[in-house]
Image (cartoon, rainbow, N blue to C red; front, side, top):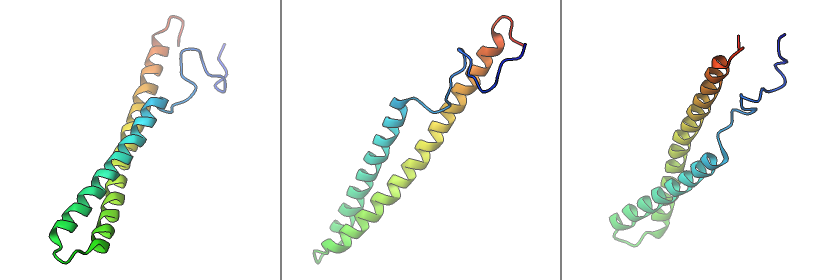
Length: 102
């Protein structure tokens, strides 16, 4: 007798979403990456400028923060997707190794 595909099995997770801790760590990494990028961009521009151009340093800092946050976000999304795919593949392999599985 075939099982209903709409009803998740006890051995297969109902969601392919990564765990909450992994998602929280990814968001923290994005925030820290953006903060570091902004500080570096501001500092380099502020040191390079001799006339006290705080406006330019702030603009470069903001652009650097956004650029770094986007870069870290891309890496975080790829890592979370790989993690979800890996977990789904392991669950499928476990389901096929169970006695009585087809």
